[in-house]
Structure formats: C-alpha cells, structure tokens
Length: 139
Length: 490
Image (cartoon, rainbow over all chains, first blue to last red; front, side):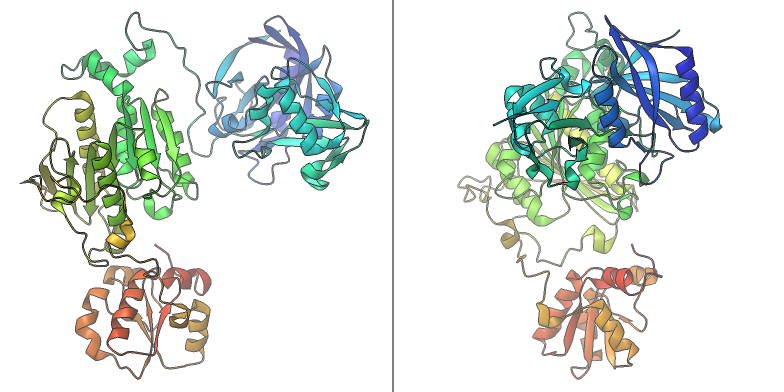
C-alpha cells in the first residue's frame, strides 16, 4: 500500500506540530482509495485530550473521531491519523502499537527541537501484531 | 419491533463484509452489538476481549451520546436511532522504552528451516560445530518454561530469547518494583509499577521477535502446575521460595521433564540439572525443606546484584545443552559458587533409592500441599487482630509518651536505612540470646520490614510467656508510607 500526500497537507501537519511543540499534535487523514494507493485529499486537526504527559502521549477526542467517521463514509473516507513525536524519531512506539487499529494509516512526524523533520507512514499487520512501513509519495 | 442503524468505522469494515452501515433490531446496546458480532463473526475479537467484555478501546455512541454517560451497555436504542462504533485513538512517542515491533520481511533462506533474517541473527551459532544448523533448528523447535521472572529469570529468559528458543513461557504474578532493578536486568526504570510479565514480554520480543513469548500470570500451584509445565520441554527453576521449588521439582519428576535449578543467597549460588530419568532430583538432595524462617529470603538477607546474572547464565547454558543434547550437563552434580572468593566447587549427587519423588518406590504420586509440606500455614504471616497494631495507633501512643518498647527485628543494614525513632534493634536471629534483656511487664511492639519476621518473633516471645505484645501491621514499610514518608523505603 502506498500513501499519497499533497505537499500542502504535509505543510499543514508540520505547522500543527510546530504549534503544539513540545506537546504532541494529532489529526485525521481523509481521502480516497485508488487501487492499492490511498490518496489523502484533506487533513483535519484534532484535539489532543490526553490528560497528562502530552509531550509523549496523545488521545484524540472521541467526539472528533465520531464526527469524522460520520462525515466521510463514501468515496471520500476516513483513511487514518497523523501525530507528532516531539524530540523522538518518526518510528512507532510500543504504545502506538498497543493502541493501533487495523486499516488506518498512522503518519508520524518527528519534530526534534521544535523543527519538523521526517514523516513516515505505518500500517498495522493485525495478524503479526506489528507495524509495516508504507511507501510515502509527496505530490 | 423497529430497527436501528449500526455504523461501522472504516477500520472494521473489512471484518463486516465491507458494510459501512448495518440495520439490526432495536434493543439494548449489548443486544444490538451481540447481533452484530453474530452476523459478522470476524468482528468479535475487535470489539470484545477474551473475557467477553467490550474492549476498553472501543467507544460506543447512541446517536451523539457516549454510552459511558448513559446506561453503558444497558442503554436502550430506540427504533430509528443510530449506534456508532468509534475506535478510541491514542498513541505517543517513547517513555524510554523501545520502539514498536516492525514486521521484518520474511524471506525463506532456500531449503533451510530459517528466514534470511534468522540466518544472519544466528550466524555465530550456525558456524559453531556443536550447534550448527541442526542445533539451531532444535532450539527453534524447543520450548522452555521459566518459573519466576526475577533475578534468575531475567538473564535466563534474555539469553534463551537471544539464542532463538522457539517458545518461551514465563510464570509470574508480580509487578516491577524499584528494588528489583539492582539485579533484574529485564526491566527498566520506566517499567516500575507494570506487571512483570507485560514488561518482560515486550523486552524479550524486542530482543528477538522470532520467539513466541507466552505468559502465565499466576502463582504456580498444585492445581495448575501440571497443566502449565506439560506444555514445555525444559523447565527452569527461578523461584525464590521452598514451596514452589518442591512443587516445580515434583511436577517435573511426574512429567519426566528436566528441571534446571538455580538458587542464590547474598554472595553464594547453586546450580544443577535435576532430571529423574537420568539422575537425582531436588528431593534426593534435600529430602526435607528447612524449618520455616531458618533460611532468610533475598528480601530479608540481601543479595549481590551480579550473582543472579552468573547463576542464571549457568542455567541458560545448561538448558541450551539439554536441548542440543551436547556436552556434559550438570546432572548428578551440584555446582556451588561463591562470588566473594570467586570459587566454583562441585558436589557429586547420587540418586536416592528411597527418594519419595523419584526413588524405587515413590510415595509422591501427585502434587501435594507444598505450603503445609514446608511448614508454612496460611496463618503464619499473621498473628491475629488482637496481636496487631496499626502504624497510626503506634504513632499516637508514642506521641502521648506511653512507655512502649519498640523492638526492630531486622538486620543492622536495614536499620541504617530507616527506623522508628527510639526503636531498639535486636535482629531476629539474636532474639533468643537477648530475651533476658526484655521485660514481660513492658508493652512491646515488634516490627520488621513488612511483618512476617516480627510475627515469628512475636510467636517466639509469646511461648516464653510474654503477653503484652503487638506486631506492627505492615512493618516499617507501612510506617514510612502512612506515618513518616520523610524516610526512605527499600
């Protein structure tokens, strides 16, 4: 599976991560399935409502999830999520894995010292209970 | 009866034959969801845990309301309403612990029973004449149960996982404590407070994702031991108490399994391989357990932190030799190690023909009550309510200036870490010699770290005729926690 992300949406995610640094930011990836590719057409910010330690944890307000899931159910659908890793690499953590759902793409943006760097995409292999990295194309 | 609409999130549609909305009869939330998983069986494990309860990470909304704020699963869903299954989304970066497991590409290495990755990983074994491809295959097909993930279990399980033992079982029921970190190298600071098995599984799978780590979160008992041990080829005894040690031994004898034994105390350790089919068992060496309280535990007597690393590594070595069928295992030999003098000694062990477990006419034909066998009655830890005093009550008495004699029966090193003001130190072992310094007329409060040693002291004094005795409930641990948090705990 390949993830296709327009540069403008990448810039929005980077801006979001800068704003919330040193806390994690999080949001939705919305778009369409195109064969084996998932093409993101829209990003949407979410609130990190994790009660503590938001530098290393995020929880998306479940109401935001409900609304996105309701709003995008047809051709344009809810494809996944993004979140930032302040001062940590763009690799999924054990906690990311513990809380991962199948199907969704999880994009992770590393933001060392407040300046966004690498973005990676991950998909849960539900059988192996492990993440697989997905190829990312910025258009 | 009308129907309700159930909305399936994109994440779960693949388990619902691609449906995004399903119409089901109205009813309570639990009825609607049960009807849903009955129709799409594959959905069940994503919505319900093994205990049959709705998973924590699944939110359910009726129209726009989270059912947690309604009547939970009892919430009525009226006809025409909607039910939304909403994934709870969370994650985050690193709290010192390792990254998540990333599935390695699995490419088979020709005709070999390994993937390309495994060939690289095990290369130093594969070119070792005594192991080789055949030996490594034996390790991959082998299963080992490690009883206890403490000082010994930590190095044993790390080395066995690294060596590529196919299936590794762990038995423990504790959580990681700060006092474990001095020797239990499986755990990190960030694991403190977590169940040991959860932390151990993560760490071991991090070392080698090819190993299947199975966790048995239970205290091993006469009821469950046979069922647990039966599933493994080799058993490692990493226990810290006599009842479990005899239990593991007897179960291994009954099942015909090798028992790789290790034990540690202060600066000294022992190791052997007990395998009744080929040599003596633990009961041939120690037919009877020592009287309770005679041999202090590591929690009472201390233990040199590196010692379990050495003894556990010996156990891992022996387990691997047994699996490979190579070399001379420690069958019929007891290895004694003293870290202070850095000396190894070896005792020859003979199979005892009169051994109740593995002798010619064994009397142990099934597992027994090992607490009773070791002289530990369930009441041993307690002395009864009328003989106990709560830390707050003792504090009040001392504050009022009542003439209470507080006797600390711990060891001097423990006394240096924390103490109750005015307490007199008489280590348990010296109490018989110092008893004439105590008066039966005084009101005496005894304490140790958490209670068992002072309970022994109390019973001893009571038999001598002392009546005005109390045991400090929870020991100095409870005192520091509830009365004087300015002192350190250990």
